[in-house]
Image (tube, rainbow, N blue to C red):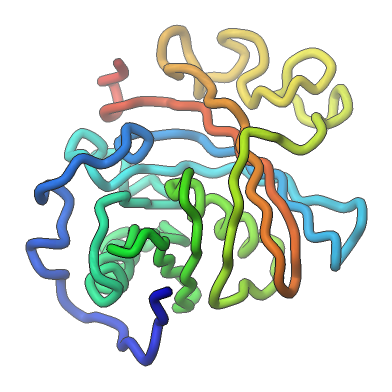
Length: 229
């Protein structure tokens, strides 16, 4: 397992080999622009309370997402890199996009390196759905609670229970959990623009504190503003 060690904050751009556009084939999700809706639950803090938060998540592995990146709350790359280069890339993206709170990059050994606007580093072990790690950490930051420097996640398509009807005006009838509700009900998902809502994913972890989060992504675009496909 990779360790973080004492890695300084970078002041210049990462090496060219670590930039998007280098050789490699990122998973399709890493090329998307999506609105992520996260329900975070930390049983050690509260057995029942959970924080529901939404944000814009943008992939870094396709030049087609360039115009969305200044608007992103979360930026993520699935192109694997060394830990040092992953740190450099993540921190450089935060410097380039001051409105972004979390940037993540895959490491060569399969972990996910996350850098936050609070100048903290986190190493997350997760096999699948690595592009959702930044969304989890973004919501965790919003909770005001400290994020462990190292996390081991398990991921499965098993969402948390749906919210009660009317709990969120973006949910469909009966709290279906679809952030867009009925077709066209939310301007973020205009006709043909959303590209569909991914099946909710449940992320779970042990440690201190243990917890779980359900994440649902509504794809706004696979390209850029005004270029939906």
